[in-house]
Length: 86
Image (cartoon, rainbow, N blue to C red; front, side):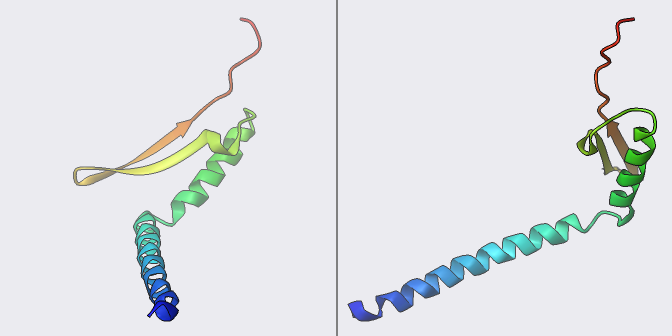
């Protein structure tokens, strides 16, 4: 029986891999629930903000938040600290 133990181990490994894949697919599907325009909106906002202030790409966050029956567009911009003394 010890000679066939390696076959059983592969089935368990395959089962674990299948469960992990299900979790990944479910996570990807949940992420798709948002509108398709949000990534493009975030890039365009970043371009406009960079005309006036030098910010990183991670400085602009755009999210769609459910607020009861309404959805709220939440835009957060982390501006760099000014080095100039006032």
